[in-house]
Image (cartoon, rainbow, N blue to C red):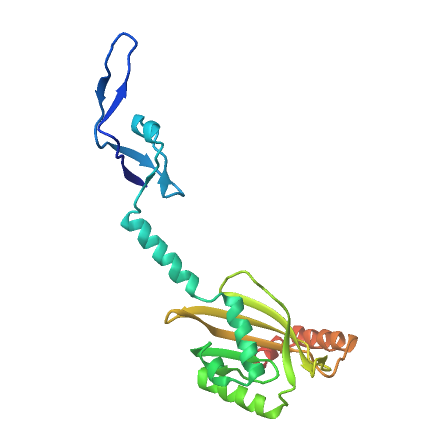
Length: 227
């Protein structure tokens, strides 16, 4: 950034020479304009003769481009981070405050709960689902976030479980993924997927089922089109 440095100083400096009996005035310009290259500071100290006399420092006024950059930076800081939006989402569910939750969800959001055969599409369908969910369980059952990605990106992963009056609820562990976008000046959830711990745990039998299904598809590949 190239800026102007304006130096205000006394009109004259009196220097006394050994060979003269009276002061010899040396005129100094009342203002000088010098180029000054700045990077991360808005002040600099002049090393001109006038500043050596006065010991003063000169403040540089920010240019309009710098002011604009600061304004944009301030606007970015007002937008909540993605992890905070997801935290607010769970806190809103815990409070049963669906009006608040609705403001965190985009109009065309797609939400997949893998317990269900098809996703919920659109804010209204998602809020209707959460309304049924919150009405079906006690308010003593609360989501607890175990871990959440904190990098401020468009994608957030979170692991969680349910507590019943402060104690872990059986078969309630889950993990979720959320994608967010800035819409109308705020971050909103545009996609979500929940994967919940199954109550039935087949263990190694699940591997036998997977091996059997893949063997069947290798023999009859056309069956894959019916999946």
